Length: 167
Image (cartoon, rainbow, N blue to C red):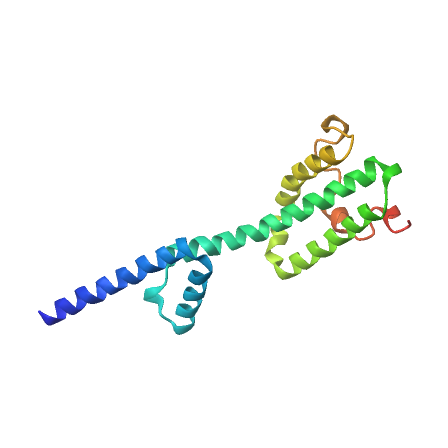
């Protein structure tokens, strides 16, 4: 009888810990992250909020993909502006192109598995780039190629376009 009561108490404590973790996740995300980190460090696997941990880890991966896509969108948008509005080329566009390339290079260095996502990312980023160009210039969608006119190698090449460095 005592063993059964002890098992029920342990089960209730475990359920209570999980409920508190779920509540903390909803109420104070930062505190929840600190609690989960401490539980992991102590090897207290039974007290972890597994459901929310899985969700957050998946979200972290998505954020890395989104950052790559968004940076590519800005970079491609500025390459389009550079190509289609040569009379307006200036330091600001050049600076944005160089900075986005540098940040993409570092992002890919930190997350090398994202290189396998580049083809898909460029397709998605091109839609973002078109939107950027249409918002920021007098150009409209019919004035621009429907598909990205730049190869990935060109997009990431610090020497492309040739006249980028000559000004």
